[in-house]
Length: 192
Image (tube, rainbow, N blue to C red; front, side, top):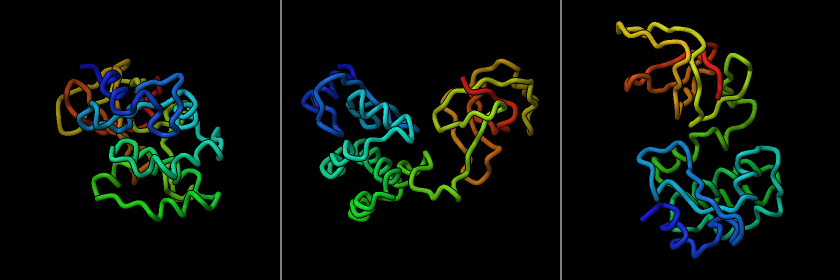
């Protein structure tokens, strides 16, 4: 059975965040570990647009998180926590965050995108053109790179999908090239 069909069944054909029944799509919560049903949710176009476009949030729309944060599904809980963290300056989202509890692995998953960090403490990764990189993005190498500790050379034009960010250094990202996970300096990549 497809993930979309399973999520439709699980969600009763409603957005698992706001309850909307129109324009539903599968939303994968990045970064994925195994993929599949446990790392996805059914969401409406309005929720997805506001999740993926920081600064475009309608505060009243997200009052729905008061209910969805209690979902039995971790993907729904994680997205709820991320959006509440993003909106916490409004006051009421912080009160809801204070009621949530995650084990260490789930909290690490929720924090993997940098939501919840204060802006002055947040490390921002940018590609060679200054475009902000996020966990799960795809990039292309803009020059040949010798991989330290091996004889491998990552060739210019190589696509690196599903990158991970180094949360301690804004110049480093990780990705797989030829099946090997390597650290790449952000000035040598371009977001696709």
